[in-house]
Image (tube, rainbow, N blue to C red; front, side, top):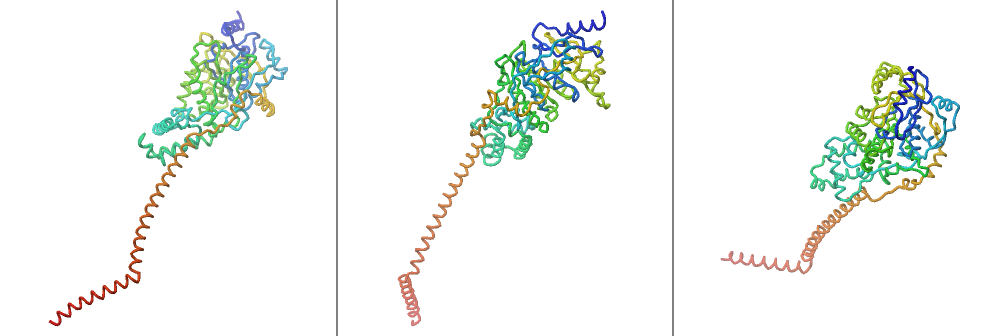
Length: 515
C-alpha cells in the first residue's frame, strides 16, 4: 500500500463517525488535497471546546464562520464575538466565485451558497440589541473579581451587597454602587458600623477608583436594565436552524476590561441558569470568542481562575467555547488543556521569539507519521490548517493538514442598511431596546439622606425656636422692670423713700450729736 493510500485510510478511519458531524474540508498530503478524504468533527464533542489559532490573514475568522454556519444548519445556536466587524456576512448567501468552486472540487463536494438566521447584539454604541446586566446579578464575589479587589475591599463589597439585600435596595447600575459607597462613609457611617463594624474610608476610596476605571471603558452602558436573558441565545428559527447571535464589538478593542466583564458575566449566567445536560448528541449553545487574548491580557489572577473554572464546568451544561487568537500561547495552559478541537492556521517565524513560539505550539498537537508539525505550520497557505478533534469516545483524531471549505455565506461586511433591515426584523428588539429606570439604591439612598437632613433641620429649627423663646422671655422681664424703674411714679416714690430714709438717718445722727 502506498503512503498516500495509507494516509487516506488513516483519515477515513479517524474522521468517520456514527452520529451527526460537520465537515471542515479535505485532508492534504505533501501539499496535495486528496479528494473525498474529508475531515469532519462530531457534533457530540463540540461542547468539549476548541481553539482556532493562526497569524493575521491566515483565515481564522473564515474558519469560525464555517463552523458557526454549519452548526446553525444542524440546529445549534451560537454567539459570535465580532471584534473586527467581518462576521456580519453570515446573514446573507455567498455570491460564489470560480476559485471557491475549484477549492470544493479538490475537496470532493459541490459548493452551495447559504445563509444563517442572525441577531445583532451590542455592548456599546454599535447597532444591535443592547446587552445589559445589573450589578446585583454579578453578586459580591464576581463583582469584586471584575474590579480586581483585595480581600479587605472584597469584604466591604460583600457587606454593602448584604446591606442592600437587607433593606430591599436593588443594585442596578454603577451609580447605585457609587452612591452606596459614599453613603457608607458619610451619612450612613454610624448605621453601617453598628451593623457590620468599622468600614475603612481608604478601602472605600480604592473601590471607588476601580469603578471609575471601569466606567472609563464604557461599563456604565453595560450595567443596567433590561437584563439579557441567556435563553434568548438558544433560539431556533422556523426552519429548524440555530440562531447566530453576532455581538458587534468593533469599538471594544481599547476597552478590554469591559470585554472581560461581559464574558465572565455571560459565562456565569449560563452556568447558573442552564440545567445539567449530561451527554448530548449536540451542543445546546456554542460561544466563539474572537481575539481571545483581549479576555486574558487585562484579567487579574482571580479573574483568570474564575474563567478557568467556568471552562471546566460549563461543558456539562451542553455549552461549547471556542477561543480564536493568533497564538496558542495567548491562552492560559489550564484553559488550553481543556480544548478538544484544535484548528491551527499558519504561524510566521520572523524572529527568534517567533521560532520558539512555533516549537511550543507544535507540542499542542498529536505526533504524526506524515507531518513535521513545526515545519508544516509555517508553510500553511490561506484557508489551510492543521486539525485535530475528539472522536465520539473522546480520543484525539489523527492530525490532518486540511484544505478548508469555503463559507456558504458572504465573506464580507454587510452595509449599514442591510444591518438595519435585519435589526428591524428582530422579534426581541423591542424587549431589549427599552430603557428601564426604576427606583434603585441610588434613588432610595438619596431620599433617605434627604429625609434625614430634613429631620435634622427640623430639630435644629425647634432648638433655635426654644432658644429664641427663652431670650424673648428674659427680654420681656427686663423690659417690664425697666418700665417700672423709668416710670414718673416709680421715680417719685423712689425720691420720697430716699428723702425719708435720709431724714431718718440724719435725725438719728442729730440726736446723738446733741447728746
